[in-house]
Length: 261
Image (cartoon, rainbow, N blue to C red):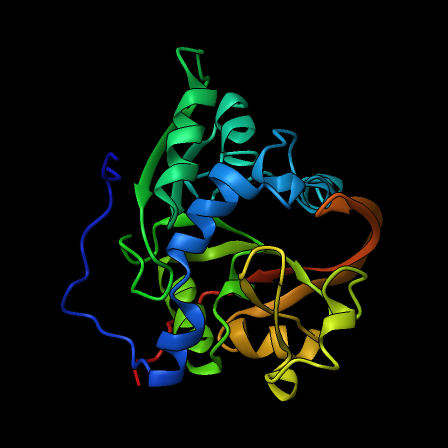
């Protein structure tokens, strides 16, 4: 996969990783299987832009605000958000752990013309983001942070997002609520219920379910939550229809630098 033109490798920057986080968060193979064979989640094969992204972009539009600069899509998957945004003229950089997902993204992209640009890179969000400081006008995190099931890793990731976000930039986050109809019922019997982590028996993938305050703890401070809402809709997962509940937040960089630990 191609390297973002404005990106840089941050091999010297290290996040502290606990043994438990390695056990719980290394699921590249599981996601390859989900995208390639299992396809329990509609996002593994559906190409329409995410409901939450549409809602939050609409919020920005009502405030006469546009995203004027690069967009980094963390956990871009098959490009369901990255491709439409690039088609609209944005400069998009997609980061994705699964090689299978990136292959499917390239197939979907094909030879179609883009008004903007789309660059992809295989990247594990457990590691520092391969993007320059103050680079992005917006960061998308659409059910990506929930893959970081260790709190220490999540906070390190939140600092990295703040580092790459330019002053005035926004982070658009859509993630699973604690009372999500698909994941929520498994929480009671989960061995990681105190951490709000469940394992999907259909895929073997583990996810963190959030309260609003827990999501704030990832990104704020130094970022400030500007929007907090819950998205409720009906959707299929593992061949069954569920009532889904997702948190939708916008965080903004008000111009403060991200302190190093």
